Amino acid sequence: PVLHGYFRSSCSWRVRIFALKGIEYDQVPVNLIKDGGQQLTEQYKTLNPMQQVPAVEMDGITLSQSLAVIQYIDETRPGPRLLPADPKKRAQVRMISDLIASGIQPLQFQNLYVIQKIGADKVQWSQHFIDRGFQLEPILKQTAGKYCVGDEISMADICLVPQVYNAEFKVDVGQYPTIKRLNQTLLEIEAFKVSHPSSQPDTPADLRA
Amino acid sequence: PVLHGYFRSSCSWRVRIFALKGIEYDQVPVNLIKDGGQQLTEQYKTLNPMQQVPAVEMDGITLSQSLAVIQYIDETRPGPRLLPADPKKRAQVRMISDLIASGIQPLQFQNLYVIQKIGADKVQWSQHFIDRGFQLEPILKQTAGKYCVGDEISMADICLVPQVYNAEFKVDVGQYPTIKRLNQTLLEIEAFKVSHPSSQPDTPADLRA
Image (cartoon, rainbow over all chains, first blue to last red; front, side, top):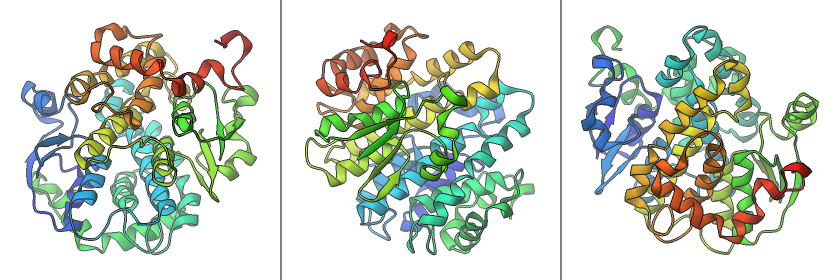
């Protein structure tokens, strides 16, 4: 696989979790800020008409949404499963993942399209939505075991960690004890370390771990 | 199953597609505008801490994200499948569904949280994002047969129709011939008719078909 992504993009981080399955892949950095946004070039548009990261080329197709990529590798690659076998637990994993992917992430500070449109009050606006999003604390309190849903790592955990990383600069995560605990547990896992924004090929020297 | 939803909510419409599987269900209307928003009551918060529609109670669990619900019923109920058997096609269905669910829907005019925050320039802002979102035209041009992905109805179609319904008031859908054709084909199907916002228990008399 080839991942076209950006070190700071939380959706790119979700895909770098290829590491959990032991999948080797190449990275092609797409700098969302440099040159007015490298995702806006005609060349990149050919690859992904949505002009967003990530885009993944694998098995002869190009996929551009992180949850679709995660579920595709889960269905076609060996290694630890990223969705539980039980349908109810699978549904809860997808619910939590979607809550983060469509309920929080698109509305937060890091989202360049929103920033460009909003202009002023960026940080305040973003905090409002992140705080709101972390109303998923009571949901996780019900579903979590060692990880977000029960005792096995899943796609929900893969969504949670990058989200908390983005939130930490602006929100007191300590308000959300379940989220805080899950995040700490997950960050100890090697696959989350190697996929972390602080250690990617395109991470600037001053932000490296 | 019991669906807590709102006639105009595109995410609620996605869930009403229960009809495609022939699943009987009860509807409990949650009026997002009346009484300052019935989704904000303490009673509703107990059901869905995110205070959004839809929320579905079934099989002893409560699910609050439409794509999680659709995939859950697909995995646990008989009837026509809503995700294709082929993993690549499944991935494309999920990609298109996520593009709509997390790339377009959260940023558009109908989204109450965003409206409250944005205030001015609402329609213009929304059109920008819907137009942008309809860059999925070139993607659908590649994946579509009779329906969004090949010749079988899928979750992608279930996402497309409500999205076009929302867009039609503000964007010239005729600019997107594939989207326009798919939408017309899908609206002929009985399950899309019975789930349409114009014929729900909570549809006001003046908006009924």
